[in-house]
Length: 624
Image (tube, rainbow, N blue to C red; front, side):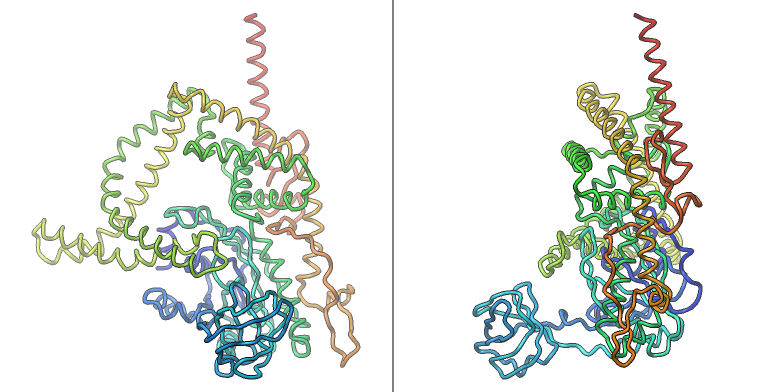
């Protein structure tokens, strides 16, 4: 059922690194959280083991999602923000101060040590309560005078942790999103330490070996129906046994060290862009970099994205990179202003004979598919309008109640799916009833239509519409760029600009790749030191020191990290198998390629272009 939901909503789901998932033993999956309820459904559908997710207790009370969560044995978590309430009176506090003065407040009733006061967007952690009108907090980051506030009560999570520990001791898998809540930012937000507390607590409770696997959910237009997603499972690492021992005497230090490992691992499976504009530039650069007539594998797609992100972070002072990104941004903006995409320009970069036969083929397929696509579109129109409108309303509500969301796009897909799960069965029953009435063959026809005929017919209609849209895109690109005289001049400018950018991107990446390969190798060594099988090995290498107190071993100051947000190029040497390494292209290859076959294709393409240009030059000389 979960696979059905994922495969219907998404046109293409690619998986990278599934072989890294252990077939047995307790595992904690940690993933980014950019698509609300779709994220756990995606991982549950792709992980071929029992995977129990932590879910907000508030969500367990929702009609549809609560039922689905109980089906997969999700573990509920009470969150302070879900229990927040408006405090009585107003409070005042000085920036950097620890004393909060209240007017008309009831601190003794509402607060206890560990609770939080939310003033604006800032949180004040309560240390002690001295009376109804006075409490002590951690140093305040703001100055507030007679300000209203909310109270986030302290929540006892011991029962939830016990359930997690029991599941891990049985060898089950736990899924968690360390960011705490879903969001629509391009990069990771601050991770919450709950996953480290769970892992270290489970080790102390008797779990002998516990692995953590980072998961990167890389969506292409996550809120759109029939979009694409690439799921990457990173290299698993064991929770160090020495950290579990350290957790007994120094909980904060052990949690901090493990969270550093988790953060580093998660950034290894993320694209690494600082915002959506930069991510769009990386996607365009990837399209410019790849051979025109070869499709990149999911592994190659991710590694090119990560290479651009790595170069953006490491070469901040390189003027060429900044200029190249500015040109790509300008190219993207011009395309958006005309309602086009880079793929429209790319599809037009073919010989006239190829364009002719492509146009004929697309036109014939459009004519043949049009009756079926139109019928499918009209039948699904009520569902589409209802899900879209309700999802937009939920988006507005989510944006109004969040401080981390940009446009609240992370809730759109989830709400579309939830609404469709309720409305589609009712709508299909209505269609089956109408068809049974029109045919007049008796009530026995209704269950056949409802259960046997309508579901596969609707899915076939979705596939037909997918193919119809792709045919239209091919036809549109040819007509715009080759067939429409009024627009051909403007479109030719796009072609010339793309050709120029393509050459610049490939030359830049060809020069960049050796440096990025060295950075990736160095980062791999640092990751091996940080994410090791046990801290005993790290201790032998001088990464741990003895503090001299009760024989406790504590972590030494962490070595400087190169923030390779999204770089996972270090796992294998540059010349190993084609799906596990970054193959560095030579200077004459025109590109730093993800594997040898891709590099060979690019070299052949350049040779063909060079030969074509040479023949054209000879023809011109002969004519003169």
